[in-house]
Length: 310
Ligand code: CP
Ligand code: NVA
Image (cartoon, rainbow, N blue to C red; front, side, top):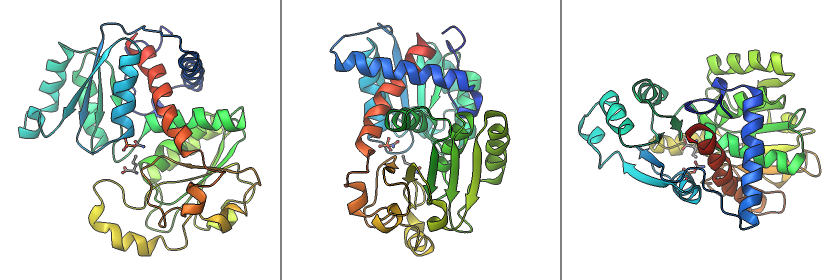
């Protein structure tokens, strides 16, 4: 796909519905190829630098294994070990890495850092999570919802918990794909108002419906998918106790699941805290697709790398 080659992937809002559809179809195709044992190496000889300023299990391993499966190689760059950690600028780092690599994935705190890196890099930059967005996760999540529910348009997804990076990317993704999405969060933890407005205006043009509420029981009525994420994200560890108190009543448990559709799917980007945002029975029960979601990170990001770096 010519229109995706060389592009950055910083936020889902930068992409059109048709482009997301293309990536999801490619992800499904690559998943099948892998299951059939067929090797496909469109990125032979290419390299991806992977900068991490925060911890990761899924993002790191799925990108590194993914680029290898596509014929290329990933280079893990902990910000503690590269010169960024000693004050070298993002702009200089971007220009230096552009001379060696074919793509950069970065996980960091501020969305501006990712944008700065993309501004100075001459190769595709992929957002591997910021405090604002987690677009790679949502790409894999859309693939998972499609596998479970068929066409995305009209699917009702209820996100319960913190109005964080996951909530933001889910709102934008759902808006683009014509879904119905409700974010349920207590006051003080609702998603960013500018991003909510952006999602609502995208929704208007895509037949989607985005809303923010406070009452979980009311929201899950008729839900096809219930999604949650941790109450304290990376970087908010010291707020853990306060958040546990503030999110009381927002746990996804069997009682809440029983108020949704009988075939409701439970999703979580992981890592999870059993007994906090989700009960053990729900995340380990038969509505849960959390490991399918985690696996789809591999397939979705292989599609992304193939399209951007191929
Ligand atoms: N879901 C997710 O991004 O997991 P990691 O933090 O392990 O990469
Ligand atoms: N909201 C979580 C997602 C982790 C994948 C965090 O930012 O820590």
